[in-house]
Amino acid sequence: MKKGFVFDLDGVITDTAKLHYIAWKDLAAALDIEIDLAFNEQLKGVSRMESLDKILAHGGKKDDFSIAQKETLAEEKNKHYVELLQALGPQDLLPGFKEFLNAAKEKQVPCVIASASKNAPFILKKLEVFDAFDAIVDPDELTKGKPDPEIFIRAADTIHIAPEEAVGFEDAQAGIEGIKACGMFAVGVETTEPLYQADLRVKQLSELTVDELLEK
Ligand code: G6P
Ligand code: MG
View 1 (cartoon, rainbow, N blue to C red):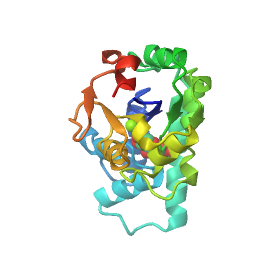
View 2 (view 1 turned 30 degrees about the horizontal axis):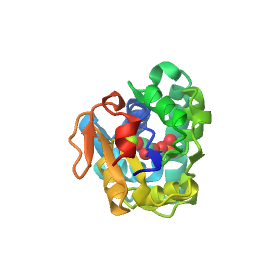
View 3 (view 1 turned 60 degrees about the vertical axis):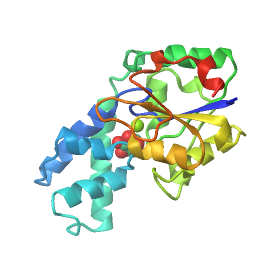
């Protein structure tokens, strides 16, 4: 019997991956680095600085910038990304998510956000679902990124349940690995790439009911 739900944000609640992609692609182009959608898959679930490192490595420019320069580049990308987020609204919730969340709330199942995004609170407010969550894990308080399970352990902790008592929802392979590494039940929300190790794989949350997951 499960007692709580832990949600990734990008790719599970809303599709901001394409906005991250636009902002990264522009920044990369300014550095003479080309990235495509296939490469973008590798950035899913990966923190801002780690994403920048991957892009620089991809362009053979891994050692060309100081930490301070990289921070400026990451800030620049984020400024562009936040501009793109301004148009976000409830219409951008992924199919089935709002219904699933409402059903969870009706049954008083605690829901928490486990996303590497520092923009998560802002995005949730734009989507008009911020108040429905019992907690949002602050990525600034973590020492390791996904696939380390730290963020998921912290998420379960904030709603006072053990990881084994939670169901985690993820669209990134690194996220599924983190969920499984702490004994949580993993729901993989698949878009293009297949997700390995997930206990259940769906295209969208409308394929699931709250009751069936609580019974897992
Ligand atoms: C999520 C996304 C990543 C993004 C990361 C950090 O995990 O899947 O693509 O890089 O959040 O987002 P931020 O909004 O803090 O730059
Ligand atoms: Mg994601």
